[in-house]
Image 1 (cartoon, rainbow, N blue to C red):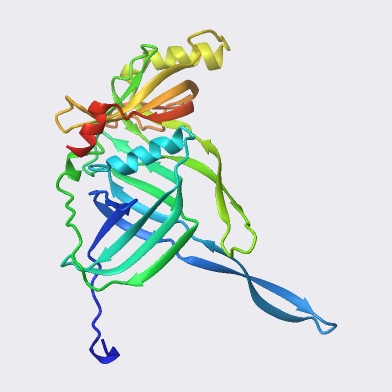
Image 2 (cartoon, helix red, strand yellow):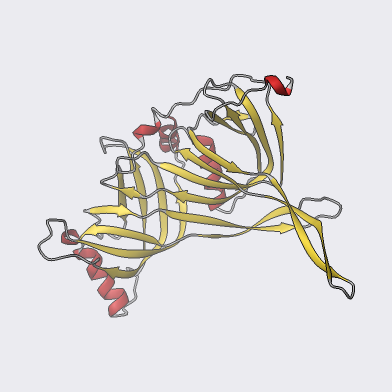
Length: 311
């Protein structure tokens, strides 16, 4: 098309493909994934003149915000990563206009999952649960598209995944009734770039997986069991078979009678306990906060939950 007749197009829709298959996930945003050239700045000669020149290349991460409904393929890929059963995948992100006509295609190859951020869960929230994922590809290509129609994605089912519908479970029997909030947390996959002979882009090798602490906010009236655990382990320094436990974070449907998705927690221990600042006479619920350390996390991909991902 001649430059004089080209028209801008509005930001509209995305389609995420993994290994040639559409994920059907609602992609809220996409960013990054382009090749960047590093530049050296060197001094030359007695006059200390500066010369800049290109050196190595790297592919910047791809950052996605994805609705948690209909993300079967993506969640199973994340589950493999957290278990250190690493899987490199190819895929693409198709950028389309508001009429679902593809305008730009970004393909990625030999991709690893670098970070997964679980959204803040808050009983007072009216927001849908949006997953943040950072992908690190070894190579990527980009092309303007010819306007093919992408598969339409809707956030209607995504709205069923509310950030307010959740449950914390501790298998030790310590009560988690009255848990009002679990702060957002990020699981990080270490990735090491390895130069490979004549290739301009490095190969990527996975290293360790880091699981963060969890910050919990709970009604103080229901925190007796947590306080007893804290006093025993942290204050008094008693350690036995009840020092650590297992548990889960469960995402529920809007009626709170079905588990849509579960993150299993292993080697869970209490790290700290606190009562946030409050003022006398305020008409508000008295709450406490506490930090739990977690040895590892695991996405539950049992058949019934796997089907729930597509509901």
